[in-house]
Structures are given as structure tokens and as C-alpha cells.
Image 1 (tube, rainbow, N blue to C red):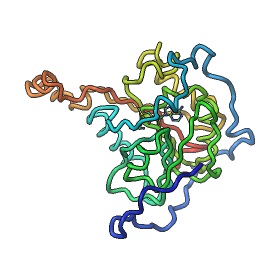
Image 2 (cartoon, rainbow, N blue to C red):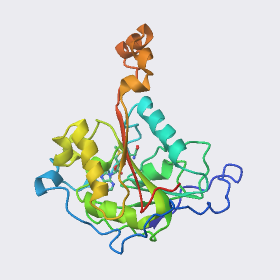
Image 3 (cartoon, protein in one colour):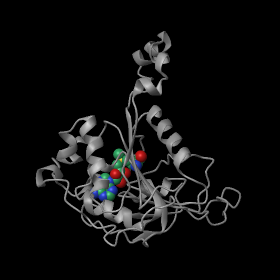
Image 4 (tube, rainbow, N blue to C red):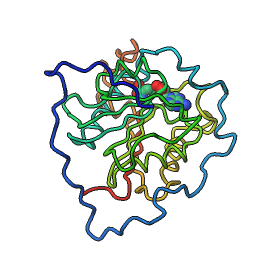
Length: 271
Ligand SMILES: C[S@@+](CC[C@H](N)C(=O)[O-])C[C@H]1O[C@@H](n2cnc3c(N)ncnc32)[C@H](O)[C@@H]1O
């Protein structure tokens, strides 16, 4: 169900309505999408791989708002940089498994940002959402959203909680416009008892592979791209070994959350 949008911003704060985004061009010679595009080719997870240690309904776990940041500022800066690189003004954006904070670049104005999550109070506080809806994706995966209606679908530090990722990624494919992008980002933090077995038992490498397979199991997603920024990269190579970085690490203020993103497009990557 689509809930009421958060309180309407004052006219001066309201995002500027931009003209429709330019048409996307598929690469010359690209083949037309296969008729089976969007179908699930195979299951990625075994029954154990889908299991959570805490089997209680996720809605109970998220019943009270957690107004915290789930990853450190270095991670969030890397994510916002990636969004600046890949997202365009005027787009329709879906933020799946969202909360009270937005990682979208402040200067980018979108046509519409729709948020989804499990806690309405968190979502109502998110300043970038025009609309939001609450839905437990482990109970039902179908999104009550029009097909081919989003330019971008984002999922931040949450993919590890999906027990039917194959169906959720097929839905992401359905709601994306051809050429639309999906960016799934994650680190090594999690609510351990709520993460699926395949994630809990995995390594950084295997988690990247897992998300890659979530895209690959749906016919029609482009070959996923992986972006990794490990803390030493984020601190800028040499800078990471500087005395200042050592002191910052000592006081726990240095960036330490590794950044991973897996990116794929529906049908083709626009030129
Ligand atoms: C670690 S928080 C991340 C929130 C947000 N993406 C961010 O970057 O701050 C995990 C989010 O996953 C969502 N989530 C967890 N289990 C879910 C489920 N079964 N169905 C839908 N959303 C779920 C919750 O709403 C929660 O906000």
C-alpha cells in the first residue's frame, strides 16, 4: 500500500519539477530484449542459504524506529559519490529497504523518489522521499508499482535480509525502465540474526558473488559491475598510513567500513 507522503515541503524547499528525462539510447547494434526478459532462470539460494537465525517476522524486528546510521561516513561518502556518477536529474528513483536517511546527492533533483521499508516512522522522516510504502519482502515480493516506471532502483546495506532475492530482483527488473540502473551497496555490518545463512556464512568475496548472482538469475540484466572501496582506498592510499590517519584510527574516527556496490542495468547500459 502506498502511504501518504511525508509532510509537503514549503514551496521554496519543494524539488523543482524538471522536464522529462532525455530518451535513452541503446548501444548501436544492441539486440532487442529477449521475450523471456525478466524471468527467473534459476534459484540462487538453497533452503539453508535463505534461513535466518531469528525466524520471527521481520516487521516485529523493525517495529520501532532506529534513527541511527548503519555504516560510517566514509562508506556513505563513497555511496553518494557513486550516485553522483550514475544518477541523473529528473529521474524516477525507487529506494528499496530505505529508512530515515537519504544517501542521494543533495544537488541532484529527481522527478520522484519513492521509498520502501518496514518502518513507517523512519520513512516519514526521510527528507528525500516524495512517497513511501511499507512491505515485508520476505512475505510477499510483488511490488505494487507500475512496470517500466523507474530510472533507478537503489538498495543500501539491506540486501542480506532478503530471503527470496530471486523474486525481488525479478520485480526490480520489472519496475525498471529499459536502460534503468539498479545499485545494490553493502558493507560487512549486519543484524547477524536477521541476515540469511548464505550471507552470514560468507566472506566479502562470496557476498559480492552472491549479489552478482542475484542479478544474473534474472534474464535480461546486464553483466553486473562491481565497485569496491576498501578503507585504505577511501583514506587515499598514502594518507591511510600517515600519522594523522593512525591517530584517527586510534580514536575510532577513521573510515573503516569497506564499501561494495554491484550495479546492473535492465536490458542495456545506456551510452
Ligand atoms: C540496515 S537498514 C538500512 C536502511 C537504509 N537502506 C539505510 O541505508 O540506512 C535495513 C533496512 O532493511 C529493511 N528490511 C529488512 N528486512 C526487510 C524485509 N523483510 N522487507 C522489507 N524491508 C526489510 C528495513 O526497513 C531496514 O530499514
